[in-house]
Image 1: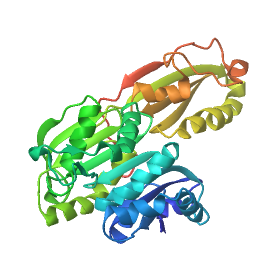
Image 2: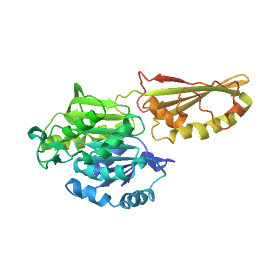
Image 3: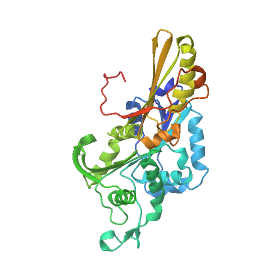
Length: 342
């Protein structure tokens, strides 16, 4: 377990629990992210059964989380990542407590058996879909922007059980999506060949059908991990609210809006960030809050079903002058920041 330097003095941190792989790699990826993170690494051996069986006991995961929390800053959000067979633990956890997990990253690890056993699809076999259902349900929530789900995979074909290409094809088909062919360079010289995305769900297919190609996926973790909170090239929605208050009450409203508005927004797992601005103009001070979201659907967790309507705080009417009942939404089309200044 590692508490990153950014988390050591933070009021809150995000928790990432990673399954399978040398501990230094996910720890380095967490530290390189620059985010306040607590990273815990679980290694139980080889084979998905080594990871799934312990977590079939519904008391194991809560106990693990409590042990981590006892040594950590307050945890705001919780993410799971797994390489190869590590998906077995993640399947059990999102089956039992899907609401507790804000995002999942699977690195070349999403498998199931064939029906009949060991009979590949080319010979008339079918996927054993029962073990994929928890991932499909989680993917559906990611498509709606409620959770984040990132999957990377190679072209390795095991033969005796379903490949990550076949299992991701299943998810993509069930979600009504299609792969987009592309050729892009990824981490460690990996070549990306396809992509499927919607909302906060992302599948990236890479070339390679050998053992070293499989390990390269794990070493891509420093690139893949940040996609859990900042999906790759995803459309981001900016929600813009404006309000005016008497300048005599501007300081009081600054604290009220931050504590009850901005921090409430940041407490929603799908929110990507928020900014608050103010400008004094004589007797009136204008406030503006911009919050960032992975989709319009995800905004409903804060604003309710009609996201075009302003979401007023309990005391807003006490402060605001002629409040506008509506907000505006924009797609973020470009983003450039000075290095280290964001």
